[in-house]
Length: 292
Length: 243
Image (tube, rainbow over the protein chains, first blue to last red):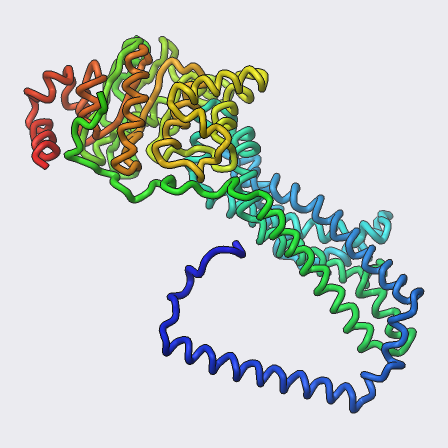
């Protein structure tokens, strides 16, 4: 997806190029001015003082932040490992031909896609303990994320399956494969490939949802950053460092997706000429052209 | 009779795609289905392995009525090879894997045995040297020949061809037709929906002409092309032959 040639825009002519150059210069100037204003404001208020940043060079504090990052990553990975397969299963159930399979899946998806994760977390934090169920902190955070994330993932997978050419599954059925075999062997592998960029966005969403960990006091990155900032009285700096770590982590995830995409190479690319190519549906008048 | 269709009807909404179609295919017979577009040829083809359900009538393969669903339907489909207009090779698998998938997953053949067999088939359709390539790396003609090999790998009793050359560039049509002619000569039972009159003349035992969902005329290729009996068929032939 990231290496597609420009298909959205026409190649620019001379006047277009001129305009683009001017716009580029203007935008760069505006951004530079904004950055300068921000930095000056920080400087005036003493936020750029070395002392304010000093804590973030000390190993114990870095270790504390790393523990937070570890918690964030752990919650994200476990959520993803549960939410994505569950989402795929829900999508297939929702696409199944029998109504008793379809309805519960549809109800689940519509319900948990609509509810905010925070509300679900409150259920696990406040309601369930009253009923005598008290889960560990980690699961109080992860289960709500999985419930909501699997519902979103299900809709993504469903759209992906529907967007794949019907011919692919028909070819599977024609060989005598069952519905589930066709989905597992033919449809899902191709859909996964197509959905890779969307799934990475979804993964990043899951990662960001783990910041709701502060509600249940689960030690994730933002929670630890906040604790740290309050303790050392450097809240702004702490948040900036945490923000930087989030940006770097998520950039890493995107990069990972590009890497996977490249590794897969031409596998699963749509074949040229298939997809009911326009060339000659009807070809009357072509007569004997057999060799021999 | 290997295939026996009686009174088969199928509608899409208001459109009557098949209207009380009767058709028989003897073992080893090659039948070409001709007709203007929208005459129901493709639907006929797709009904035989139940990619489309029928509204009325009966279809029997080898004396058994077409199963409605489940394992029996899958088993029936595994005995009927289907070649599509748009090839429909599995885009995420190499040519070789496309051909071995059915034998391994449906027939439970060992991988090695399936691959040996698949290479023989790819050799037979002339693309053995492309076995490791993915569909996107093959020309249309090569893809369609791999698709034929994929269908043959299941040892089908009957091969269905749904306009197998209609999506191909002209210079690639012959390589696919040549494979089909060889297949016909080898005694395979074939039902071929096509516009290739050359193939019909050369390989078909019988031509079935359809119009508006009905079988209007059945004849030997020789008789059909030289002296079609019905006006509709004469019209159709006049249109395609005067180009």
